[in-house]
Length: 168
Image (cartoon, rainbow, N blue to C red):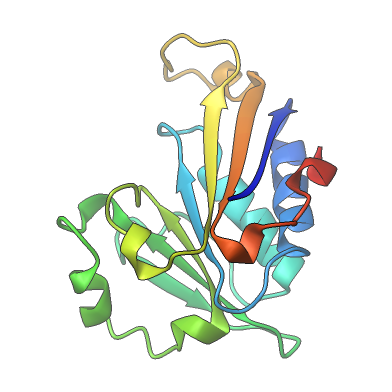
């Protein structure tokens, strides 16, 4: 039960715009699980989300702090941006992060969260970003111009009836 969409995102600018469009669908308490290889565009998408939610602070990859909270500038939900890459097996550690923010009142975006955050909520939006052309990433910047395939899957009652396909 839920909704599903697959889009092709040709440029980093479009990825940021997708984040802004997605932000319009998000509500306090939403959990967004982002997956994709390094450099796929997860942080670019999250930056767009932050712009759409009108939160404070530059959205950058939170690798070294594990989680970063961006309070709303307009009375909306805060954006909690989590990098679960170095978290252990599950999110007990996340409770220990003491995020001084209430997750039910925030939009929580988790990178590298597969297998770690699913039990936080029965409702979640999974966003998988893949290189549309396949092939391994190399380090040159031209690689950033590869189109991406973005697969959006809404799981649980929260996402039933949400038309993710409209984002395409």
